[in-house]
Length: 336
Image 1 (cartoon, helix red, strand yellow):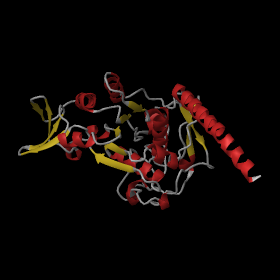
Image 2 (cartoon, one colour):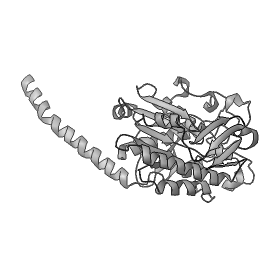
Image 3 (cartoon, helix red, strand yellow):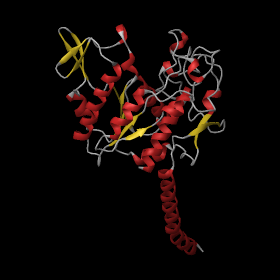
Image 4 (tube, helix red, strand yellow):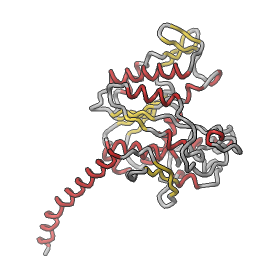
């Protein structure tokens, strides 16, 4: 009986594996056909949030809205549902297996920090190397005797050398291009050989993005390294943008929008998409803008930084919306 049982197991095992492989290929086939960025937010209290914030050792205080006094919990329990498929359930063990001995780096501003913190909380029990390089503009800033210079046509060689060491790169830039006066970390902008006190920020953004794109096209071996670009994370500072004249900003927002965001596409998005489409190397766009625009409820508002450093309608509470960004990243890695 024992020998017979073992024989059956040996005979059945290949069939199971073959079925798993076929099933996996079918899932990938349908995921490739699905627009995972078109959909809506579904209340799902049984599955969300994806982790307990109190158990994550990497969670930034500024994003820990529950610890900072936010009493409502509805915003924690929404799942992104594409119209034409289901997203794969995030699986930390599977993520580990796919990226065993691989290195992943987020490069960008504080929204990259937001997403990086999210992913560290989602997989902190697993052994994956996750790095963050804070670089709000992607191009270099040099210190000269006359001040700090943002150089639109140059990538810092030290940054470029570091980027080439990684297997997955997720880039992001936009929000800091809007900072002015004392909040901007530069004194001059250099465009070619011309030094400007300031210039049109959209023009500067486009020039810098083209510099980054040329660097990727020239230096990244896409057989070794997978490159992603995160689209613009929307802020919710003006309630009139989602046609709510009684409101002021994201304060007291408790639920996502259930209809399409009424504002047209930002010019920075148009620029970003054009630059990416003109590149010779494949870069996957993590198109989080539209789905995040619906989440006016997901920001820290007064519950960032211990509720004493003002309003925040730009970053996101964790757990929260960036967890979905990372589910989409996971899905892109599976289907690509």
